Length: 409
Figure 1 (cartoon, rainbow, N blue to C red):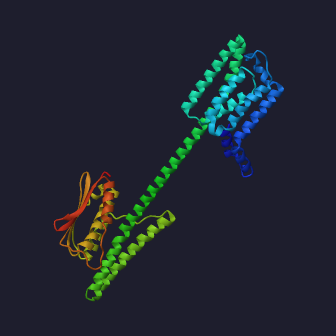
Figure 2: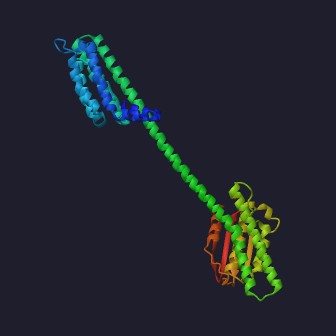
Figure 3: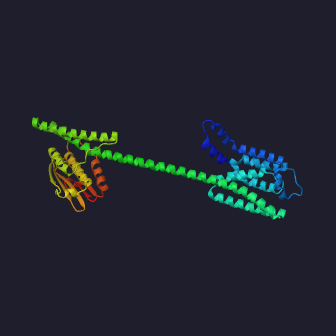
């Protein structure tokens, strides 16, 4: 009863009666005990306790007020039920048994039902099964004793039915409330778990978005910015020739315009949630990458796939291969300046192979463009996502980048 009242008050309390409900919850054991005491007095006054005289073992009927006196310890147990519910149930069970077969009285029985409800609601499934077994055993025992005392089977059955109905209803109600509380707790745990998983998925999605933004920024902007720095430095460090300066400035302008367009496209997508990113390069852009590398001072040779095989390559694989060539040539311009670079793209029945080898180059002293391996690491992630293999590292006196990408991807 106490727990049910707390749940009901929690679910229905508004701003107007919140203080009153909290006061009721805080003093509920005392209120229940007072109610049982009043009920005992009223029952004694109207003679309700006389219904148990048929099974009394006393030689003569006694005053109903003895039932009130016997219910007083039960009232104290109800008042202390929050701290000592199980001890109180044991004490009141004995008091109720004595009252049934002696002075009668209804107070001890009501106190028994109250404490039985309280203990059952707060118990686990195993303890509740034991309480059910105890209720059944108590009903059978009292029915048998009533038969022995009265010698009348009808009275014994009537006593057993009454007691069984009271204990059974009380137990069923308490069990229903306990199971509802357990179900609510389970739903709360599941809700917390769902929230935790949703937060984890949100963080994972956010990280994927960040990784995608980092890749796009690197692919679309980093190469153009480094090309601008290389061209500007070349123009500054060479003899003043109008034609060479003009070509360098045009190259810087073209790279800056391409970087600006890529950034504007990406910002539009991020701000509006729509629009199209700059289309990733495909094999038709490789000659432009090669020309850019040659203008940066590299000696580049290309062994590309026959035109007839290109349509058989999935667009995503083709774009990834072009990215590998783009990133590799940009790295060669920064770290193998003046060297020889061989680009080879081969399309097979099951895979596409890309290889970029550089020899005889040297890192740029000016402008200083130190790398941190981010570009190669992202290429490795992309190739592995397609189920392919990627490697980049020293090869003799040069550097080699190799990738094998399944065309079925």
